[in-house]
Image (cartoon, rainbow, N blue to C red):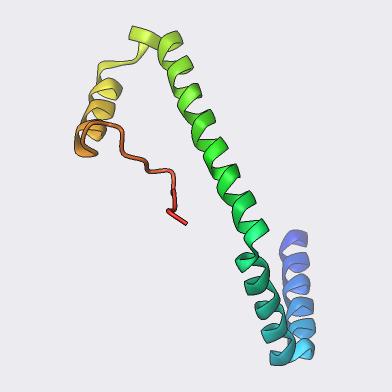
Length: 100
C-alpha cells in the first residue's frame, strides 16, 4: 500500500509540474532534442556505437557457438535453423543498421 501511495503522489507531482511548464516548455524541449539528434557528431557517434555492437555480437555468437557446440537441444537447433532459412543465408542484418 505504501508503494502505491508513493506512486500516486509522484504521479500527481509530475502532473502538476508538467502543467505548470506548459506547452511552450514542451515544444522547446522537443526542438532541442530534435536538434541534438540531427547533430552530425551525435549521429556519427551513434552509428559507430551500433557498428561496434554488431561486431561484438558477431564475435560473441561465434565464441558461444564454438563452446556450446552439440549441447544445444534439438528443438532449439531446429528453431535457429528455421530462422536462418527464413532470413535467407543467415547473413541478413537484423541489428537495426541504417544507411546514413
